[in-house]
Amino acid sequence: MKSEFTTSELVTLYVDGESTPQEEQQLFSELSVQRDVQQELKSAIHLKSLLVPELEEVPFNIEKNLFNRIESLNEVKKRLVWFEWIREVNLVGFALTCLAVGVVFLYKTSDYNRIKNKVSDVSANHEFTKKSISNLKQEVVTKKQSIRNTILPSVVNNHYETAIVNSENNSDAELYKTENGVFAGIVPLTADKVETENMHLNSLPLVQSAQINMPLNPVYNTTELTKQLSIAYVIEASNTVMFRSNSNAISNSMGVVGMLGLTEEDYIGINYNVNNSNSQSNALVEKVSSQSYVDNKSIPDSTKETTIQYNIKQWFGIVYERRLWNIGYNLQPTIRATVGYAGSYPGGKISAAIVHKSTKNIDVRLGIEDYLLFIKQSNSTYNLNSIGAVLGVSYSF
Amino acid sequence: MQNNNVISDEELYQLMCTSHKKDLAFKALYNRYKTRVYGYCRKVVGDVYAEDAFQETFVRFYTSAHSDRNVTNVIGFLMTIARNLCLNIKERNEKHVVEFKDLSELDIPFIEDDSIADDQLKKAIHQALDVLADEYREAVYLQIYSGLSYEEIAKVIGKPVSTVRNRIVRAKTKMRDLLSAYFNEHHKD
Image (tube, rainbow over all chains, first blue to last red; front, side, top):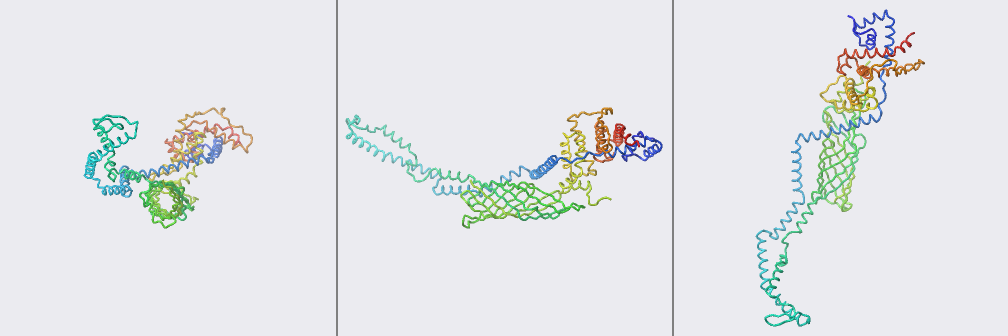
């Protein structure tokens, strides 16, 4: 059967190695007799040798942009893993649980309780019950009556006496007439004026008029409560240099992993004091500049050693810090525990440090830190354990 | 003889899909095919859009790696991504397509010196390629830059093998016609 292609096209097919045995047979039969076809074959082979790709190196900036995009894709993916996890455990439920735990924790540990108890104590001491306040009011009314019946007449009498004395000593004193004659001096109090004076006394503050030596309204304590409930924020910055790290595979297909040289992490956090004994519980934002490690396990069937670098950007977690006793020279040992996520990897940290209270607001800390991360990549999980030295400073408001 | 230490494309892609060494395997495949893909993109969409097509090709290749995906022809897969992206870019930018032209319109250099003949002829060949219709040129570029067989190219472009055979054979035969003067001169002895 004759091919659908012309002899020239058969030559192309043959040179490309794509001709069928029948096409080859047809081509060979024509090659043996036709000089033109032989010439075509030479041209086709020459053309094939020249039809090579024009390859040139990919420009650096294009490669850089590409790998930046891939890295950012990985970051997004890691965050998605985190959000997926939150979604799995129900975002709303998670948020409400956190809120409830936080409120209970604050309520139990903050100064609010202490101050509330203090106010209760004050109330108890002064018996500020409805009944006692009612009794106090009655006492005030009684005292007012007493003032009307005894103190006021004496004030009025004194007023008259003063008026007479003044009239005798003052030539400019006003002349006034009463049923008892004409007098010079200040007009004596009439019944109306006595009532006016009485009203003036009534308008005096209750405490003053009753002369009760106790606060009826605990204004001072309310102020103290407001003041104590304002949260004392602490801004802390620290840097940790890791000087020893190692990692072990927890699950399958993972070789020994070693940290790549020194790594460090920078921490900037806003903490708040929970109570006066200097314990802290923090919502933490921490930036890790670079944590890289080398996977020395070769790819299967490869003689090359391989390097994989993981960059962990941020820590998110809950921190609890307990400051211990003051050992003198303004030095205080502290221990701190962190539980949270470094990037999308769960982990925890524990650190012990000596804190020096340099000024009223500034603390300087020096200590050691050990952290443990659980890293999951594809089907493998590793733990990454590092120990390092931490130097930090914090400022309290 | 095959070097046993060289990991095949398929093994590397498998590592990309199932292993924590995804980035490493990706880089190995990238290094193998970056110049081919970049060259193809430049040829198809030109320098201006080549960067976008090239980056997007490898980003999609990277994100395509899932544990449930099985790719047996990595370069074919890469070229499929690159081709589709290039076609989209071309459609968006409505690049003017030049159909077959008369030989006289081609700016094929006059060759005097045999020592530089091949270099000049390479340029002439690529000029000749440029004047082919899109579908012919595309098939030839895929063959040149990917090294794929007709059957594999057919899978990349989603056409029957017979169509690919026709396109490539006719394109190359046409190119030989276009350049016959040179070839006849070169091979007359």
